[in-house]
Amino acid sequence: MSEKLNSYLNGVFAPYEGVKSATELKTDLLSDLQERYRELKAEGKDDETAFEMTIDSIGDIEQTVMEVANLSRSLERQVVTNFSASNLAKSDFAGVTAHKGQFKGSALHGSDFSGADLTGSSFASSDMRDANFDGANLTDCSLSSLDLSNASFNKSILVRTNYSKSGLIGAKFIDAKLTDVNLTMIDLRKTIFENCIFDGVEFKSSDLTGLCFDGQTFIGVKFDKAALNEVSFKGATLKNVSFPTSSWSKKYYRAIKTICFDGAMMDKLTYAALKGMEADLSKVTVR
Image 1 (spheres, rainbow, N blue to C red):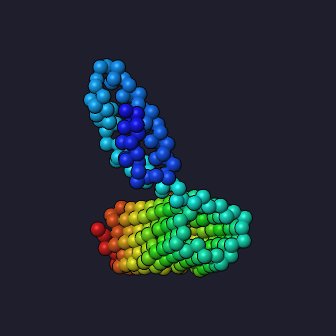
Image 2: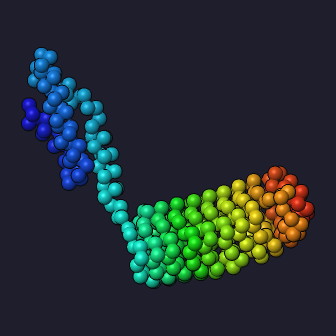
Image 3: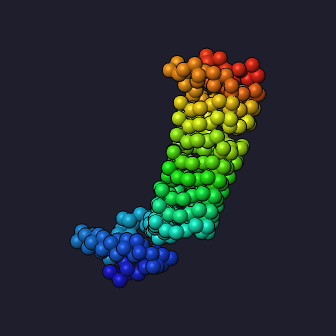
């Protein structure tokens, strides 16, 4: 009967031959089934009844095996990427998958990461000038304290991406959605943002002087301690946006008055906060 149990499992596991985790599961399962079969025989069950009850005891094993094998294959396909301290200027990484990749202290000037899945990767202390991240998935990536001059982030996936203290002169963010992104303590005066959605973004202590955010969307964004002189939000949508109020100097209030909100739409709370700082809201729509 042991051969019959083994034959049964061979049929179940046949599509996953060579998958290590499936092979290990098969070995463990065969041992368990043999033990269960012996117990049923000891209870007085005949061979066929004991076999059927043994098989029934493991439920929908085919579904379980498929899930285990698929997970194993997925993990086996993931490459552990470590390119730290490497000279990789102008390298082609377009379309690669490198979860939690390590690119620390590397020369990556002008490298192409377009369309790559770089989830959880770190680029600490690397030279990222002129790098192309168009369409790349940068979820949970660390891009802090880097030179990202003239880097491109058009249509990039930016979720919890950390850019704090980085140089973004000439960097372009076009048609991108930034979700819970950290843009604190950065000189953004020469950074380009076009047709972007900012959701939960932090601009704390950054210099946004003269930036154009016309027609863009801001949800739950914080501008604490940010320099906002001559910023334009023409036709923009602002919801639950935080502009610091009582603790700031007259100089800060004067800066708020230089912001252009013509044609913007905002919620009542954002409107009230800005009204209290005497911003020009004469051409704003409140919704």
